[in-house]
Amino acid sequence: MKRDRDDKKKTRFVRYKEGAALYSMCQTKFERLAKDANAVYKVDKLVLVNTDILDDYLETFHIITNYS
Image 1 (cartoon, rainbow, N blue to C red):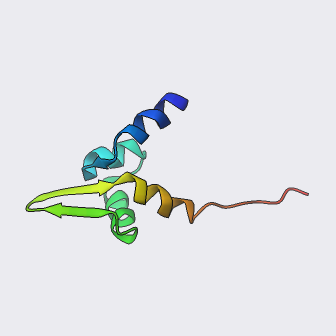
Image 2: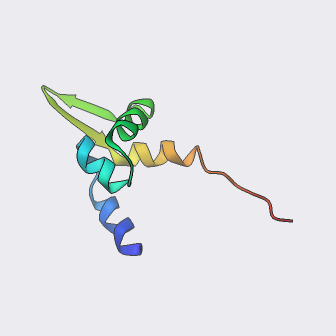
């Protein structure tokens, strides 16, 4: 599992298809999250997602449970 995280952190910009596979989700959901996170970069017809921004956005959904 640690190796997967290290590989992900090396790749800062990914295309939608790569990102969906990297984050283990369908491409439609990945595209929506990337847009909601404002992590999308468009150069002509090339669309890239900044995974650093996306990771920070996903952390806002972190659920902390108190098992007392």
